[in-house]
Image 1 (cartoon, rainbow, N blue to C red):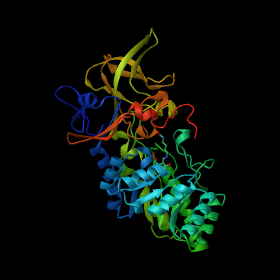
Image 2: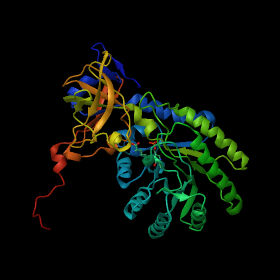
Image 3: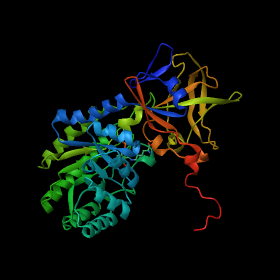
Image 4: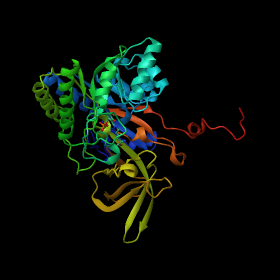
Length: 434
Ligand code: LLP
């Protein structure tokens, strides 16, 4: 994975830094991000578009992992940013990110969130439904402001992934249906609203997708409509946003392709389809989240108790779990791991890695082949960079871990570990009458 390797002490290193030392210094659980790998992935997407001579915006879907330092790294790499809430937007602005390169998503943006985004002057709203379309246009009137929008459509594509992370199918809470006329009505209504400019269409078919066929099918459906609307309404789409969802390798069973290969494959089809409908090639926007940060993140845990269920299973418990990685419990997600203080030792047994939450479903990895492991060893679980910290929670009043960035042998603490006082900061005693 990325820059991970083994040093003279036989310890796992990431970005040239000894992970066992990291665990000692910052405590565990600890998220460790390989910055060089995030930069490599960012460049992979961006340069693929440049090589093809296609104007683009690669927007990092910050829901995968958002923090001030993370946004600043994305800014350094010259990407745009996708935010889905007032909180993600606030983080981006506080990180000094240029508002014009921020795209605002969400199926239920509040009035306050819309006001905030207009106030910062964000680049575009990805409008999801009629309620939002009217609300946005009304707020623009009141505030004497204008807004650029993308119309989010559901193209009726079923990508092959977990049901909870599927979004492009017809029965979805997101977007305007492309086939029953909803998207067309949204376009017609917006053309009449002089405060809103439609830059184009957006779709996101799902997440952790390995083949490009789903993206191409979605593009095909959108481009066909764009062809019709060009004739009917003289509408030209300046932007076609194909969303995110590019899959990564969590375990050896996963077979993703390189960022550049996703782009090349999809874009060559889009070019052909645009030409077929006699349309000018629009700017292509994409929104990768997982594929920019997923395999750059590793979580370090300390091994604690062991429970042997004779002839059935050995449970090895670590000092974190579904509070820092809810994905196995929620999606049946699979991970690979090694003992960080002995990554190259011979495999000795098969164990199941349990979390410390009071919940039987709090298992991180089932049936992991591992070297001989005892309490105090450091377990490194790979590929936890996307939707790990961002979905972390305080279940059982467990504090959220710290996050460090490592690069060229240097370590930067980018999110501090929560303290017990952080946990009770908003609590008030009984009988605090207002
Ligand atoms: N664009 C839109 C509109 C999205 O809804 C998403 C993800 C993305 C982009 C980025 O998708 P990515 O490239 O990261 O796959 N919590 C789940 C994933 C939920 C994804 C939600 N939307 C997980 O842990 O797998």
